[in-house]
Amino acid sequence: MDDAFAKGVGAESLADLKTKIKTDLEGEAKYNNELDYEESILQEVEKITNVDIPDVLIQDELNRMMLSLQRNVSDRGMLLEEYLKTQNKTAEQLKLEWKPQAERNVRMELGLSEIARNENVNISDEELQTEIDKIQDARVKSQFAAQEPRMHLRHALRQTKTLNLLKTIVK
Image 1: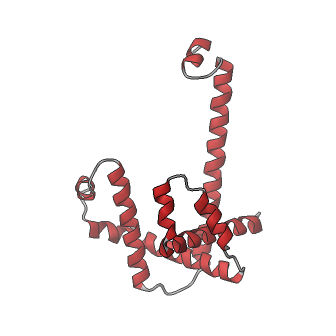
Image 2 (image 1 turned 30 degrees about the vertical axis):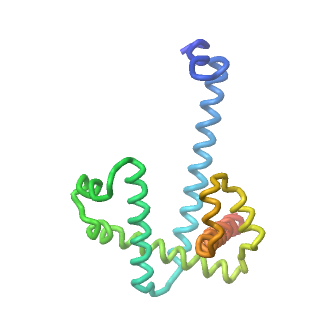
Image 3 (image 1 turned 90 degrees about the horizontal axis):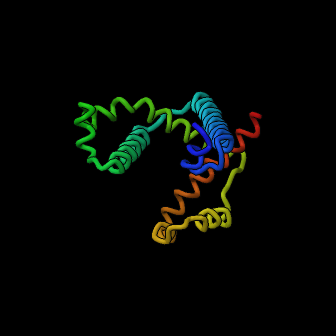
């Protein structure tokens, strides 16, 4: 590798390329460390949340997980049925495997909601609108005129705000 190679990949010089690579790797490591930190906090929330979870919530979470898989598979140009065949599994087998994770997800969700309630974490109409205003795609943005998508976004923002509060408390 030399300066010519570096220029060929968009850097000014080999030294510049090395600096960019180092910066990118450090940024990725920081991002991954932050995700790991958040995950460990969420795992602790799940551990301390002792509730009997209604089966309907677990089924809803399993359906959400399946929908997410279906979207991911579709993004790769496959049908869910084709993907399941490659895995030698049925949707029901997959849901059965995923049930413990679904239970953890629901327990984590309920725990975060309880913390949010106890700590009076709320999302104002202005905060909600600020997030909606950030959306660039007009078609996607227009979906938030309806109440249900607004409610889901408000909930997601509240959970994120609660997680951020927990991160500041733990640090």
